Length: 511
Image (cartoon, rainbow, N blue to C red; front, side, top):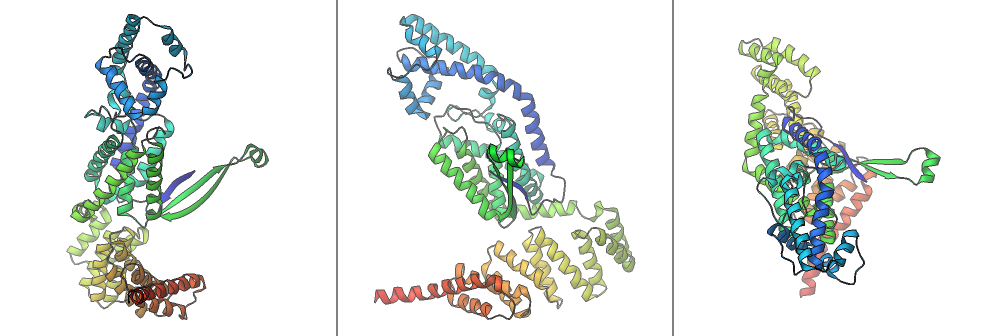
C-alpha cells in the first residue's frame, strides 16, 4: 500500500483556515451522521432489494413512480444482474425470494408491491443518504454540495482528509482563501457531474469528498509539478514471519516528483473505472473528473493573472506592518536612522532567515546607502526565497536587478533559476541561462548539471540534436569529477547521434 507522508513545502505563509475548516466540517458531519447512516442503510437496502426482486419475478405488477425509477435505474446500470434475477432457473437467493416464489395470487403480489413502495417512500424521505448523497439517475441540486461532506466510514473519512490536508493547504496559500474555497466547492460538484455522465442510470448513492480532493490533486500537479512527495510503501508479512519478528509491518520510504506520481494515480483510476465501472463500490470516474477539472482550472487560474493578484494582496496583508520589529525598522528608515534599522533587521533575519519582508527592507536600505555588495547579498537571499516559494517571475525580477547592479549570481541559486524557467516552460530562456551559467562557472559542480540540463532541453524540447551532442561531449570531457553521471552522458550521446542520423536516413530512403 502506497501512502503519501509529506511533500517538500510543508509550510505556509498564513494559517490554512479554509482547509482546516473543511476538515473540521467533514469530521463533525461524519460524527453527527455516522450512527443514522449505519442504522438506515440496511433497512432501506433491504426494501430496495425486495422491490427489485418482486419486479423482476413479476413484471406484470404496477409500480409507483418511486419504485419505477428504482427499477429502471437498476436495469440500466446493472443489465446483466437484472437478467440473472429474472431467470426462473436461478437458485433461491434468500427467504424473501422463496416467499415470493410461493405466492401466486396476483392481488396479493400487487399488495406486497404497494406496501414495499409505501415503506420505500417513507424511509427515503427520512434517509440522510437518499436525501443528501448524490444519485446519478436522480440528482438534486443540494446533493452537489452535501454529498461532498458525507462519508461512509472512518477509513473513508481519514483517507480523504489526509489528502485534503496535503494538497489543500499549499493551494490555499498560493491562491488565497476565497478563491481556494470557491474552487473546492465547484470542483466537488464538477466531479459528481462527471460521474453522472459516466453512469447516467446509476441509482447507487455516491458520497464523500474524494472527487473534490482529486481536483486538488490535479491542481497540485499543475501548480507544483516538480515538488517532491515523500511516499511510504507499507506491506504486511505472513503470520509465520509475524511470530518470528513480532512486527507485522514493513515500510520503505522514497521520494518522487508530483509529475510522476499524480499522473500514475490518475491512470490507475481510469483503468479501474474502465474495468470495474460502478461494481467496485468506488466512484473512480468521479475521481477522474475531479482531477481533470482541477488541472484545467489551475491552468486557467495560472494564466489569467488571478493568482498573481491574489498573491499580491496576500503579501500586502502580511507586510511588515503586521510585525512590530519590521514596523520599527520601517519607521527608522523613514526617519533616516539607517544604521539602526540595519542592526535591527540583521538580528531579525538571524532568527528568521526566511523572512522575505525583512530581506526586502535590507535591500532597500543598502540601495539607499549605495552599499552594492550588501545589496547584492540581500538580493541573492530574496531570489532564493522566491524560488523556494515557487514564485519564479519574482525570482527572475530579483535576478535582473542583481545583474543590473553588476553581480554574478552564485552557481547554486542560478541553477535553481534555470530550473524555474523550465517549470514555466520557457525553454529557450532556460537554455540561455544554463549556457551562461556554464560559461561563468567552468569549474563548479553546477556547471556539469547545467550542461547536461541544456543538452536535455536541446534534445527533448528545442529540436537541436547537434547542440545536444556537443554539450554531452563537452560534459564527457569535463575535468569536473562525474563518475556518477557517466552512464547518463553515454546514453545522451547515443540518443543525440540517433536523432541527428534519423532525418538523414529518412532523406536517403526517400531518394
